[in-house]
Image (cartoon, rainbow, N blue to C red; front, side):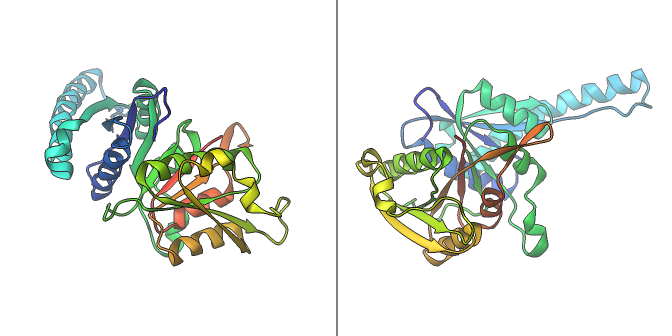
Length: 277
C-alpha cells in the first residue's frame, strides 16, 4: 500500500495491453486503503535543427492538438480496461520524455507506488527490460511495481527475498503490510550463496514480531545463486507477487540497481514490487 503520507498510485499508460494489465493491478492495490490511481500518458516532440521557424510553429500546434486527443484516448483506454470502475481513476497527460514525465508526475501526485507494464521477452532479449521501465526502476524514489501479465486472481501468496540489509528489512515490512491488506501469506526467502558474506543462523528470529503480527509469514532457506533461486522458487510455488529490496550502488555519476534485483525483475514469472531503502 502507499505510504501514509502519500495519496496516489501512478500508472503510466502507453495504450498497450500491458498498460491495461498494470491498471488492473493498480486498482487492486488502491483498494487496500482507498488510495487514488492516476493514469499518466506522456508524449514528446522535438523539431529537428534544420526545420524553419515557420515549420516548427506549424508542427508545434499540431502536436498540442494531438495532446488534446491523447487526453480523450486515455480516458477511453481506462474505460475499456476497467469498465464501470474507470470513474475511480484520474487521468493526466504530460508533454515530456516518458521516464522524465513519470518521475515528475510521481512527485506531483505524491505517489506511493508506480505501477507499470514491462515487456517479457524470451531468450537473450529478456536480459534487458524496456528502456523506459529500466530507467524508472533505476531512478525512482518510490517503489515500482512491474507487470507482465494480466490480473487473473487475487494476491494470496507473496514472496519476499531477504538478506541482512536495510533494503531487505524495508521490503519485508512492505510485504507484511500487503499481506495484511490482501489476507495473503508472505514467504521470507533467504538464499545462502557459496561466497556470500551474510547468512542467517535462524531466519525465524531475524523477522521482527511486529511484522509477524500483521500477517502469516513462513521462512524458507535455499542454497545457490540468489537470483536463480529466487526465480526458481517463484516458478515452483506459483506466487502472485514478489517483493524485493533494491540496493543501489554508485556507478560513475549515477545510481544503479544491484545485479540480483535486476535479474529477478527481468525473469520473475509474477509481478515484482521493487522497494528501495
